[in-house]
Structures are given as structure tokens and as C-alpha cells.
Length: 350
Image 1 (cartoon, rainbow, N blue to C red):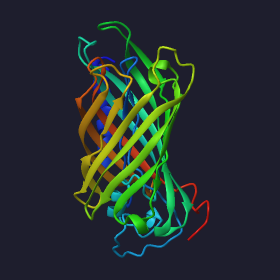
Image 2: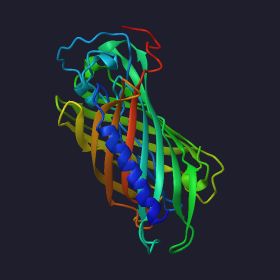
Image 3: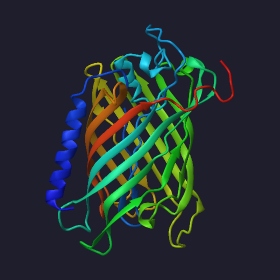
Image 4: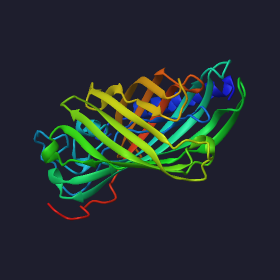
């Protein structure tokens, strides 16, 4: 990507962000991203781990304040903009949405003696609550967030110094499945625990681990009247090979998405939502990537009266891979609200 193209992409992205942020507000919203490092090829992989919330359509709004982290209504169109703004950042909430992130990444390290390499990344992540038992504040639900990435013109180191090949490929598929405690038990706390899996869907070995993996995922957080915060750790361990080379070690990696958001108005939030990454297979100085950042988010409408959350953020890695990895990211997220596909509990209950 040359400088002229980079300036053109930034200009188009800025124009799209401004047009959406200036749109009128409704009632809905949120998200985040995840980043993973491939130690064998010194290549960064990104996958967004973002905020989850869910949606049903059969209860009316009570309007009364409760001690629950969830709104009184299961219908996203019936709750206030402020409630939707908070629920959009809730990883174990009631509402379903489609998270799509468009990012420009900056990659650098010891093997690059020139300026940081710029690449593109699109993350697709549907957030789907699956009600298992009960309803309302007694509902036990899994909130899954299958995540897959498209890397665009990603630089892959090919030699010792300044030798890179640009590739456009798809990543492995990641599927965490945390089971959330019912609101009646958790109150304003966000509490969930469950398995996580990854599948070897990468279209090139540089963008995946060539293994099936399983591990543990969990959520621990809190929602107050005007703010919310929490952590979402995930671990993955290789359980079966998929044409893996004998010299490649068994996969062992993890990440921890952490977030804080504050409502400055009913429809505007500011905060951060980066993801710390760790990979045990990487060499010394390449195991960790620790980003910090800033994100602004607004609830608005598109296609008439359809609610959508729009985010714009920047992240910088205060700790990154020595050899080669992502050092910064500019991200633009579109997160429309959708009706959750399973509205009634699979195993019944009240």
C-alpha cells in the first residue's frame, strides 16, 4: 500500500464515520476487538472479541429501576437509549447483534528496518445469545461469539531483514461459549464461565495454528448507572492436529479482553476495549502483546429506524512482539442490533 492509497483510505473512513456519528439517535448499541500473534511466522492475527448483548421480542418495558445488570424488557426497541448503550457493552446480555470491524493495522519489529508496515483487517463476529432454561431474570443462557478475520495485504516476513510478502487470507475460527448466571443471581454483576474452541479454517499456515483447540472462557464485570467495566479471558490448548508439521509445538495461547465505558450522554460513550494476547509457542520477547486505547461510541439509526452502534477507536501496544507484530490499530466498528434467532429457552422453564 503506498502513501497515496493510505491517505485515500483514511479520508474515506473519516467521511463515513462523520456521516454516521452525525445521524439522529434511537435506542440501542456496542463491541471490541481481539488480536492474536502467530509465533511461528512472526505474524499478527486479529480477532475481535468484543462486547456481547442479546435480544428477545416478547416482554413489555416496566420502566422501573432494578438491581439487575439487564433491562426490564427483552425487546430492544422498548428500552431507553441509555440502557441500550450500556447493554451493547455487556458480554453476557440479552440482545443479539452483528459486529463488523474495519481496521488499519501498523506492524513493526526487529526484522523490519523501514517504516511500519500497514495492512487491512475485517473482523466478522455475530453475537448470539442462546437461552437454555428459564426466562426473564431467571434465564440461563450461553452467549456465543464466533469470530473470523479477513487479513488484507498483511505483510509476512520471508527473510532475516526487510523481506516481506503481502498476503490476503482468512484466519482460524474462534468460538467461546460462556454460560451466564441468571440476572436474579448475578444482580448487576456480569458472571459467566464456559468452554472455548478454535477450528483450523485458515486459508494459509501463516494465519492459523493447524490444530483444533479447546479451553476455557469467562466473563467478570459490573454495570453501574453510568459506567461499566470487566474482563473476558479466554484460553486455548491444542487437542488435535490438522496437517501440522512435526517440529511445530502444540498450540497454547490465550487472550484477555478488558473494557471500561462511561456514558457522557444517553447515546454517547467513551472508554476503551483492547485485548491482551499471549502465545506460549512464541520465542523470547514474542509471547505478549499488550495494547491500550481509546474508543468513542454512539447509538444511532440506519435504514430508517434500525438501531446501530457506531464506534471509532485507536489502540497502541505498550508491549509487542520483538521480531514482528502489530504495534497500533485504527478501528471503525459497525454493530447493528438484530433479533436473536432462538427466542424461547431450549429446555423450557420459567
